[in-house]
Length: 269
Image 1 (cartoon, rainbow, N blue to C red):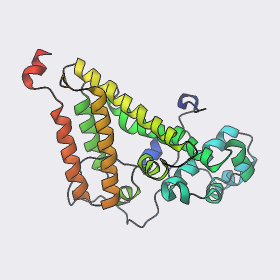
Image 2 (cartoon, rainbow, N blue to C red; image 1 turned 180 degrees about the horizontal axis):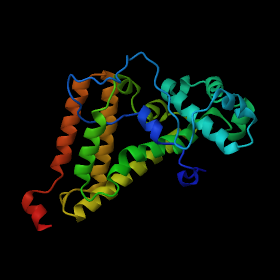
Image 3 (cartoon, helix red, strand yellow; image 1 turned 90 degrees about the horizontal axis):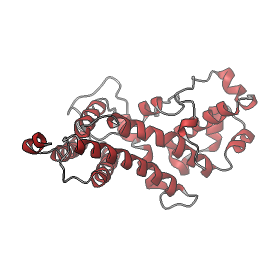
Image 4 (cartoon, one colour; image 1 turned 90 degrees about the vertical axis):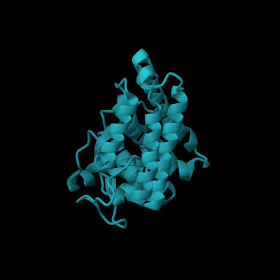
């Protein structure tokens, strides 16, 4: 059974977002930021919302804690980081245990297998991360085109070379695991379903407000936007070329603008 995010004490999003900026929109050509790092450097670590950075004492005591929820959260935190850096196949349970300070017995108390742990990461870390990154910024807007454009432009300006190299954690796992066993595809597909649904609702609201063309199918627009964003993430990760990715993102934003009503249609609405 999928654990409901609402049952968690806000554990899993903000710092992970800082690590995984996988948005697809233009960024200043030739401009670098002070945070840019070499492509071979190790991805930055993050702390999940609701978690403090563990001290050495806390880490060594994790295996003895009587707080099973904190132990589980720590495992999810470290597993996400390990999978994001190494992929599922390359992820090491030993490294997860070493980074978390949790015993192997405690790991298998919470997760029966590596696959079960990975599916929990998809459901409880990646899913809310995607929703916060892509659905929440337009959730209350009646002009989803403007909201999405502004959001994409804002976050892309921050991109570092390292973040380009890491790519999108959801897209990474789809590429690696969609044809694997263990039910991975179903867990991944649910994230995409929810992402598309959120966008479709926003575009339906935009149509009602007269900010989206009346002939636009919200579900079809949502499907195309998700496919485009993930395609941009793949382009970014494979090329690591800001100009190539920026050019593709510019075309995507032009598509978004094409979904606006003509002035006369907007006035009539």
